[in-house]
Image (cartoon, rainbow over all chains, first blue to last red; front, side):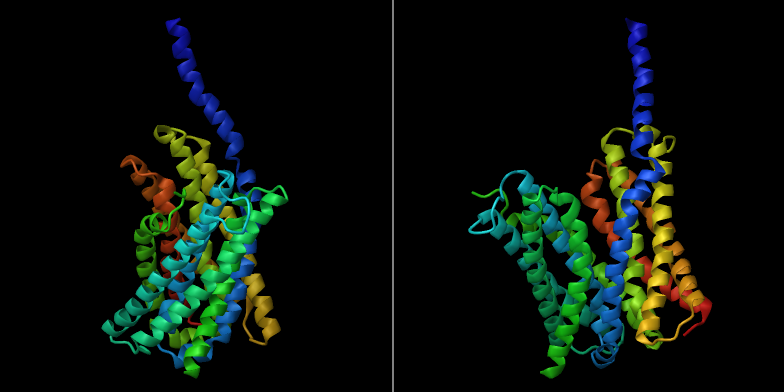
Length: 206
Length: 185
């Protein structure tokens, strides 16, 4: 028996590695990841086209380019975690409909409050770091206003998209985990850049 | 009592988001210091958001795969089994293909929008910045994943937000480095 056990002991890691050979074949990784990466690249280029259209605003509002990558990054982080939490909530059977659902409302209010707090932090930090480096800044109020308008507006739009998409996907028999997060990541860049552009336009009008 | 509470969501997300916000501002400051050069080349503005994301995206895929391997108990053999090497080769192929597609897409879009730019310059910027980015991001992905597993933290929670943000910073630094080498603007 003793020898048999130790035989199994030697075999099991090899068995695991055999299975992993299949699971981790280079071909399967590339086949699964590349389509999403190409889709994300297209989304990124659309965000880039909007950014290139903002050249005038970037020159008129010093400090705008400082907060731009952080606004995009936060949007991705907050909205993708919202999408991923909604997926988990659906799998747990907590969200089955859109109307009067406290789990859905808590998830969305949580991510909108996070968007608000972090946008304020971002605007203020963006201004003070720029000034500390001796570079020109449009001012704490203007940068905070831009960060809050773009952060909260894109947060609301993406929360609606995430909720509709995850509940809709389940209705049509798809697993929301596989679709909502990559979709939100791609749409999120475009929406965040568009709202940043809009916020810059609004601030310039004031 | 609901399963998800507003305070619970805010409490668990805030530390990582604050870190990501500060790191994002760092990337923004780097762009700001070179903004006069960058703004003279519209194709570069089109390129930036997508280019800085490729490292973070492929790094996150690598991190998620390594996290699953650690969860399945492969840590002692991690450098000797196909999970590590195949994942690394797989995500490198994905990143290289995405960088090539990106330079083609940006070249076509620039042409349609009437910005004159040579395809070779775009390809060089993409690959110089992209290769610097993925080498550094993949190195940190492997280091942080192993360290976070060693100290008993779940790599799923710690590595991906850190890697996505690191990708932005290294990506911007890579683009500025490429501009300095190529002297295009």
